Picture 1 (cartoon, rainbow, N blue to C red):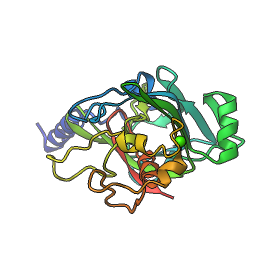
Picture 2: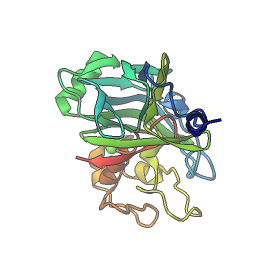
Picture 3: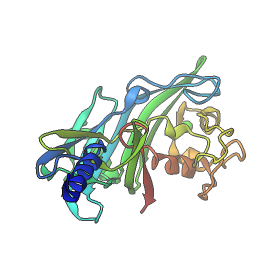
Length: 288
Ligand SMILES: [Ca+2]
């Protein structure tokens, strides 16, 4: 065997040995979807550990969980934009199932390591993709990017909430772990359609920390007692104004590394963390 054919053989082995290397030369598609998982579709129950439900005995059921998606962008490793979403799409993730946000076709089959999106205020031009037009109009009038409506119950007590967040959040450098390996962005394969879910995590609004502790022994828990107690006028409705009038109780709540001083700021900051990637994957959260 000649030296040249040995090199060719080893190159072939290197290419076929890596599952992320698509066939060269072709094109494929990518479809972006969203889903609210069981927490948004079914509800969140109590859990003594606080990890899969409320540590303080509450249950929450959402009636609306509206998220406005924009700027879904696919870039390759050089930063060149291969595809980018125009306009914004409003989805109520209490509606069951996975909704297709956008599909990009005729992309060169290769790895696109930089995938990003944004959750931005609804405008008059926003498409109510899987949402009521009346909700779209209400959010546009108020400049909300996220609007959640629901009820929390514990025993005979019910506290309702309707919180609109006028935030702009960039979610960049999205990555996840699949089959034991880190996947940055996504991979388009010849003749195939990659499906990338921009998952919405409904439990995050009730976290007691803004950032996971580096100490694995310190668990992030779901809590509602302090939110329920914020209903100062006792009308059964916990408003964002009431949350803003409620000082954050430290150390039950840990606002690090941000500067939330009251429950209103704290939950608004948590609302920036609902956007996830392909299930449990995460993006870098940028406040703007
Ligand atoms: Ca109230």
